[in-house]
Length: 137
Image (cartoon, rainbow, N blue to C red; front, top):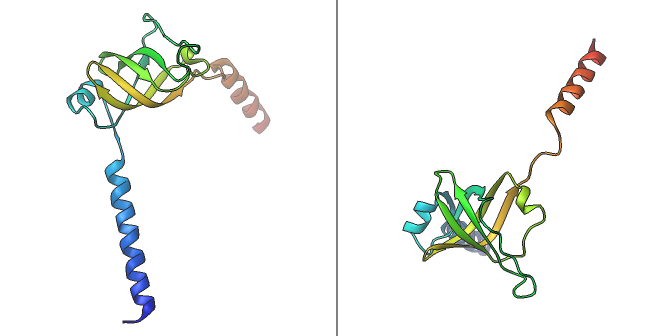
């Protein structure tokens, strides 16, 4: 065999190993019930902030811990411990995706994604469309 063939085979083996390892580490979307049935496995849980419960963030005690209650798509409420500081405008978020693992009765998240309310109002959208249609006429 030529050296180029051997190098190509080794390169393909490394690429296949990389793909397999990245797929096995990936997490999937689930509700709290599934996450708590499979403790220790990482999941993305989509839900909303329970605005009736307290949000606990004390930067003087621990600046990298935010505690809140979240309601998933099935209506299950769970306490979430986010290992990050409290995001700006967190209370105004429309929906939240927490990425982490279930542990005991709580969900421990390492990352969080938020969908914030749109800064554009429907009236503004209508005015833009109305103006654009007048220009096309």
